[in-house]
Length: 79
Image (cartoon, rainbow, N blue to C red; front, side, top):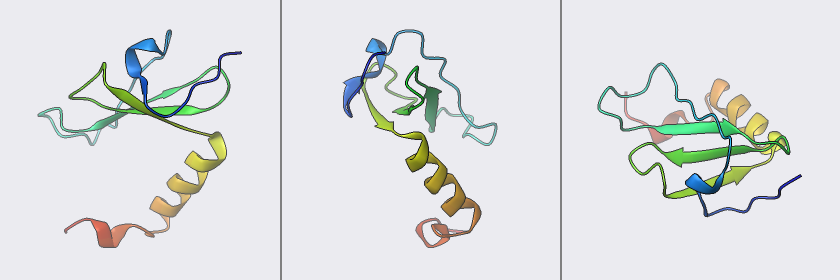
């Protein structure tokens, strides 16, 4: 199974099915995510689809999503 590291060009993630939230900005200013064969999750900037991807483990993404649901990051965005 392939191992990927942070900063890998997103275009090198063969077979990645990139998707973005339905809440994304209609101007394309958003992030996209893709599941990886090893169970990890890749994240890229939608404005630079061939640029670097950040790679997270399933546990890291679970912690981030749960923190988001719990409001842990609400202070980082304006209302």
